[in-house]
Amino acid sequence: MADRHDDTSGTTDVGRVGELDRRSVLKLLGAGVLGLGGAGLASGTASASDAQLRSMRSNRLSAAGSSTIKIGYITPRTGPLAGFSESDPFVLGKVRGTAQYSKGIKIRGKHHSISIKVVDSQSTPNRAAQVAQQLALSTKVDLILVSSAPETTNPVAAAAEQYHVPCLATVVPWESWYAGLGGDPLKPTKSFEYCTMFFFGMKEFAGTFLPMWERIQKKTHADKVFAGMYPNDADGNAFRAGFPLFAKAAGYEFVTGGAYTDGTTTYSSMIADFKSHNCAFFQNAPLPPTFNTFWKQAITRDYRPVLATVAKVLLFPSTVEALGKLSTNIATDAWWTPFTPHKSSLDGQTARELATQWQHATGNVWWQSLGSTYSLFEVAAEAFSAVSTPHDHGEVASALHKVSYTGMCGTIDFAKGPAPGVGIINPVGVQWKPDLEVFGKRFSWVPAVVDNSLTKETKLTGSLVAGTY
View 1: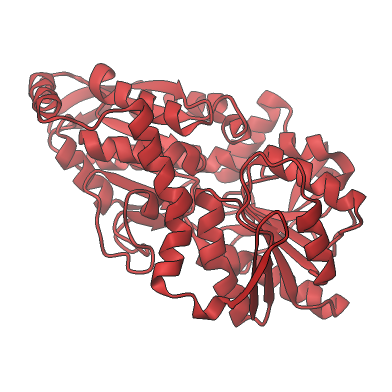
View 2: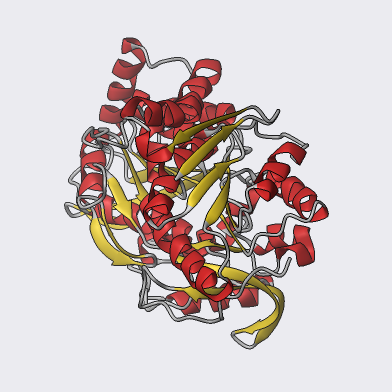
């Protein structure tokens, strides 16, 4: 399978994806991934000194008698990743209403209330690192929860590891997160003492997108060639290094748009290359505003793949509405839907009940981040319930690594993931379709579940069709 490495000026080198050696893959991963963790700390957070760590240990000892467990939650409430967190206020309201978070929990016979402090990362790595430092040193939290793309999760995890604060992340490909902490996704044996995460990776993306490609290819007899729009950042480099290997095994040729810079505004060279190589399928992992710019230019230049399967973008109705009819039948992954038998480990509420309550409260169709955000707090409750001292950071971190439970996102087992401290949830494939009804209400845009290859228990709610953008 040919792997064309193009920059945005059109210069091309032809290689073989299957021949990428370990050093090449790590270079692809590290260029953006490590930069997010390291750069964020370098410019916004100093390394933890021995004096700071001694002070933190002293503070934990003095807090040992405290009856309040402090949780910090870092999320991109503003900026280009804000769509990921639009459901946060609703979910936090539901979590705070459960007995564990409203009345507290008992640990070794002692009652502990739980306090949650929400902090905006502003969608920037530097800000994410800074607020993580503040939560560790000033707020003195017992646990940091963080969600939504490596621009937020990676610098927070790096800071948590430095300051010896337990940290749980989600909504980031595990390879991006793992490499961001200095691990090798090709040899994932290194364990990080304070950091854990749950989501999925390239194997699961491929297990969701490639079955959709195969079904459309059999119907249309389209060329088995796909375009990859992967920026030079943590997600882009992880996808470029990993996803084409799975596509190659299924017989697809890879044409890359090059490791472009986030925020690029002109994609004429990239689009021309995709067209000249008859890229019938399209896959990406850019920032949402970047994709909007690219996609409008692609349609204007008559690049219309038979199926676009996108990652990191068009995950939520607000971003779909920004593109309007150009979103029709674009496919993406959904890591949580209300069409599963999953239910809360906190109060037994079903996935459907969570979605319908969201729908009634906001007037919006279900948002997949409802489930992932909810599960962050489920896992936190599981870990705290397993310790003898909730202010002992080492004990809480160890408990996180051992969590195995079933809740709103299904079963999550941190001991059985592809790397230490990684729990896997399986996504489904969805296509955005206009003017559909969900739970008795009609919406302008709905993510219809069209592929359940990895989660057979999830009900299909629509038919997979070729793109009509």
